[in-house]
Amino acid sequence: MIPEPMSGTGFGRKFMFRLCIVLCLATVHAHGQEKKVMVMDMKTEIDSRTTRYVDLALEHAADTKADIIIIEMDTYGGVLTDAKDIVDKLMAVKVPVWVFINSDAASAGALISIACDSIYMVPGASIGAATVVDGNGDQAPDKYQSYMRSIMRSTAEVNGRNPVIAEGMVDEEVVLDSVKKVGQVITFSTAEAIRYGYCEGQVKSISEILQKNQIGASTIDHFQLSRTDRIVAFFLNPLISGILILIVLAGIYFEMQAPGLGFAGLAALVALILYLVPYYLNGLAANWEIIAFFAGLALIAFEVFVLPGIGIAGIAGLIVTVGSLVLIMVNNDSFDFEFVRMNDILRAFIAAAGGTLGGAILFFIGGSQLPNTRFYKRIALTDTQESKAGYTSNFNKQSMKGKFGTAFTVLRPSGKVMIDDQLYDAFTRGEYVVAGQQVEVIDQSGSSLQVRPIQDTIAQ
Image (tube, rainbow, N blue to C red; front, side, top):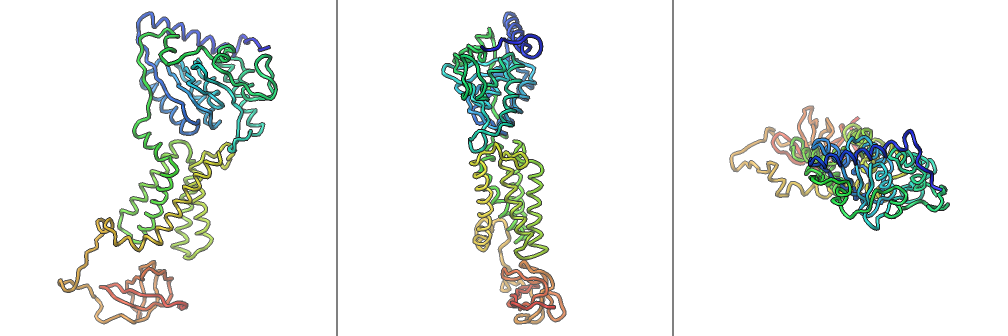
């Protein structure tokens, strides 16, 4: 038999609280005061984005002094940790929180529904099936099932509902006469939920919920994300993330090629902000993941500027950078991927690797074409001051073409060379030249010399 509600602590407390709320609302209605009702949607997978949405909605409810909060729900569940965070937030709310199950409240959705003061369901709706699954959809180890059983039971108990039924929504081994057998988890229809105390009534709309609670004059405020928050949600798309990664890498590259240009560096900075901030605000980007990203960039810079060539620092930096970009996009808990779906990891990896590969292709193919584009000519000075127009910039009294010397500094592609015991500004055709390598002057322009490296000759 189904156990009778316990008296005393915990189990009946919230039930009496709900009864008092209904009586108070009825009293207020009798005095003709208008009630403020805020409605929030929960119709997607429960994840970090839902948690942020709930935070913003509850802040809005507090700011507008809402008298009642109604959650319109239709979800098959989601991430357990986010569901628990949402439950804690809802349980701390001082005004009544009701849930309107407009189809399904499965898994994490069932847990959130049980945390509400009252549950209402449309005909044909369902609630239950809260077994915890891992990222591949398989049943998670028992330690997670035990945790879910515990919070389902305690949440139901606080709200005056039968805790054994809540536990039976998770555990196949729980036996309840006339309710479930071994090997099944509980999923209630609307009628069954009403029968066993997991639904206050069958309704077809939010207005019908208000009528059932004798609330006449009321204003309904349907919470919507602000334009800023919608923009933040837009940049959480993996495709957009991949494009932003490409812009970051390309911007850094072109800024290094043309120091002082400014635009490429600014584009990289803006793209980096647009990439990191949305994931940080939604609780996906942890501080250590962001630090790892910058550490990866530092290793790459160390390889380029301090120890040129393809070495350990460069490879390690590339791995750390791409790895951190992937971790930022998935809801892992310090490398715990138990509840992260494989599809999410794959999408994050494709976005990060695709952006990095696209940046590399842009470096090698698009770099040489950049100066010829209209866009580049708009932001960079490309006019030439020819000698026939009266300009002169040759500060060398004799021709330097054909002379040999050594690279005094690294040329990447510009730097300084030593010729006949004198230093000259020099640049290559794009080649990388290490300090001490022999070079030949192939052209001169003003005070700068264009040189080419003489292979396999390094000054000792």
